[in-house]
Image 1 (cartoon, helix red, strand yellow):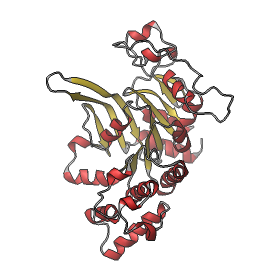
Image 2: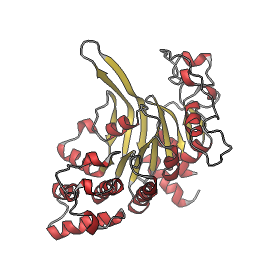
Image 3: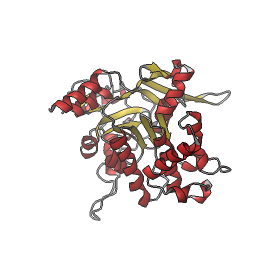
Image 4: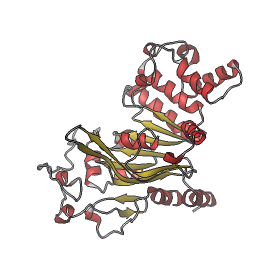
Amino acid sequence: MTTEQAERSAVQSDSEPLLRAEGVSKTFVSGTFRKQYTRALDTVTFSVPEAPPTITAVAGESGSGKTTLARTVLGLVEPTSGDVIYRGTNLAEMSRAQRAEFRREVQVIFQDPFESYNPFYKVDHVLRTPIRRYNMASSKSEADDIVVDALRTVGLRPEETLGRHPHQLSGGQRQRVMVARAVMLKPKIIVADEPVSMVDASLRATILETLRAMNRDLGISILYITHDLTTAYQIAENIIVLYKGRVAEAGSVDSVINDPKHPYTELLVSSIPQPDPETQWGREQEAREDEEMDLKGCNFYDRCAYRMDECTAADPPVYRTGDHRITRCYRFADSPVHLAPDLRSVFADRVAS
């Protein structure tokens, strides 16, 4: 391990994380007379270090809790239990000034860029509003320079973008304007919630490269929310796999994607289309699709090809299945139990190696 790596490891493991979620759970309640409870997140714990800036993917199918986790981290959804802590302060206990600083330093890029715009305003509005709100410029010409620089940073030509309404831009242009808005505020973290799912394939690589450059050149950490393991593998260093609100597996993206341990991750990886026409897509694992059961044990039991009797007794603990990864599955009962599923220590090991 080099001196530089040792210093980076010490910063990540010993100092207060920039952002951390401690045992965050969220239960939604619906219905008036007969209430229904939906547990979207179940005691999720992870953290984003102050340094070095990282890209962490949160992956899973629809309904896995990805977007709920993103909105909880952003303070848009209040957790039912657990805490979200930014720079040592609980979001629920922040003063107005602290909340304003948090809003500036933790930015979001939503899945559908069109929903972020007011169709009655030109796109200039979404760029100039934060400049006024945060007093980022002392004159109109200075504000113009900030806007132009931000647009050029994300590969847009200001003369072809400014002065237009949202419907006059393509989906990719609209999304890159939102990326420009986030960059302009010089945030510490960007939460990117499915940022390329609604743009065509030709623009996905451009947006992903922009996010990567922001991380590399501007020192911005990124929490990349996605259902697409292919783009997660392209952009992220670390990955958290969610299933029904629980962390199924986590670790370095290389190890998790190339050698999945949890049966759910195996299913996700096996569903990635292969370029070889001889490959039987999705046949690597045949899941057992019996009737769903109301279990107090593993929440993947009804779909698992490896299920065992102990899976119904209790929720499996988190096992340490490698130097840079954890897995919630009884198949690894001989591995050391990772008592607190705090992914900071898991990811810190990777930096130190």
